[in-house]
Amino acid sequence: MKPIRYIVFLLNITFLTSCEQFLTTEPLNAVSDENPIYDKGSSETALRAVYRQLGSVGYYGETYVTLGYFPSGDIKNLTTGGSANLVNVNFRTDEVFFNTAWIAIYNTINRANHVISKVPDVTDPLLTPALKNQYIGEAKFIRALAYFDLARAWGGVQLILEPTASLESRPKVKRSTLEQTYAQVQKDLEDAELLLPDAVNRIRATKRTVWALRARLHLYKKEWALAEAYASKLIDKTADYALVKPFSAWFANNVSASKESIFELQYSVLNPNAIRVQMQHSTHGGQYRYAPNDRFVQLLNDPAVSGGRSALIGSVTQSGITNWFGNLYYRKDATDPAYIFRIAEIYLIRAEARAQLNNLSASSGALSDLNQVRDRAGILPSAAITKDQILLAIENERRIEFAWEAHRWFDLARTGRAKAVLEALDPNTKVAEHENVFPIPVTQIQLDPSLEQNKDY
Image (cartoon, rainbow, N blue to C red; front, top):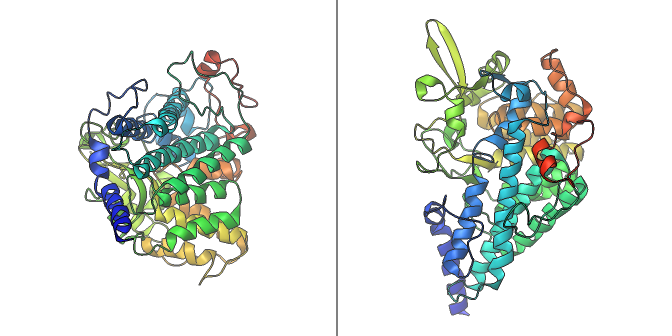
């Protein structure tokens, strides 16, 4: 038995220590979806390409993330570009942001499909069964995340589970329902959980990232008991994940992969995160295309509401005028990570699930989880008492906690509260019922006649 235990241990060490090298090995941006996968090296290259596409400018490197906070009621547009329509919840079928994100996510899926389809047939002895399972599991997790992100943005989508080499060879299939799309997400997650190691790795998929997405998925599906259960799996790992203090300790001072992080994407000087240049003020080398509006600045600077989360914004004063900007992405070399799952989200998922299950306890229920997030931010426990009050408090906490992450719009849309909240913030903003999902990009409909538009667009 000793040799077997030693081999398993060695595989785990290899997985944990080689991840940074795996993700930074070049040539990443030269990877083609048509390259053959025939040995261990080409399998690794193909998987790196999946991660690279997940972090691309159109996906978590910028565009998809901004879709989560542009139509939040908290942003002002500083240019004449298409982001003005998103900020005003004027969703158009020809909006370039929608098309950019759609293409990037389906490209991620296609790259994952290549790994899932081809790696099982590789016979290289260096690609051990454990590594083969790991690579397939990582690709299945990323495909699950991609389909989840499509579903929460556009509703049910086309499920394409085999690799394609060109648009012409892509199968013409009808859109699945939202329920069918979420079912595919869950199936991929169930497969990935069986294939992946139970290990701490903050920049590559493991069972832990599967649990995080399962918690989020069940929250969106209103499966409260399952959302609570999967969130608890992570929260109970107190030696590995924690709400770090002070609040900014998980991102400030060039920190990466802190105990706050469950899964984040790394960038480099050669592969920069594009959000920073859009968000930062020109005096910091940014283009300053959008900024927190005055209302949101006031909230983030209110010690009773935000506490240490005021670190999420910064300011520059010129000629007596103070300009505020988002400060989550601030590194001069644009190597800021993209944060996909943080333990703070998992606490708030469990808080919401427990509130929906009527476990409101301040010692072991919804209030307990909510107040731990508030305590980390340096603010007093919530005064909420009733179920409705606690759910509203959680909604407001998520607004502040995830100011520059891909959450706010999707939170309001999934709860059906976008119209009430955003119109109350700004009477000039009008949210129609059909706008709880984005329009399918008209370019995609023109390319694929089998793709149907969302209702009323």
